[in-house]
Length: 184
Image (tube, rainbow, N blue to C red; front, side):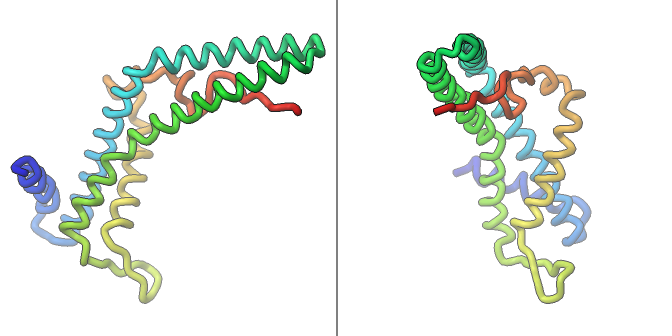
């Protein structure tokens, strides 16, 4: 557990930069969000690099199946079209859930950050703009995390390591060809 105590000491240091409690809280939360986004991006890049060949093979197979289904459609061969389309839908599912799993690697550090924040700031509430409502550490972290994620995505093409990590054709949230319809 020595590593946890060391990590706790480092993280709480982020919340003691100016000596003023409220600004320190928001500055520290923002810096914690920066750290979680960077760790998530690094993790995702490593997972992607380890599975790059798999994603390329799936997208290549999806392209082949698309071409085959278009040939069957032009030949008005419904039986072969449906068979190829069924396999294409299965392959598309593998691509989709592979990308879904890859996107989960962006988020895991945020859960650890929130768990740490619960131990330190669980009882602290801030009044928000609507009378009588308060918010805790979760909302402040969520807002910071979303802002950092947006800024990081805009800066990513200019950052030396991150600009060339992923092939955008493979990871743009969609496979390289459009989803194939199932015609029954």
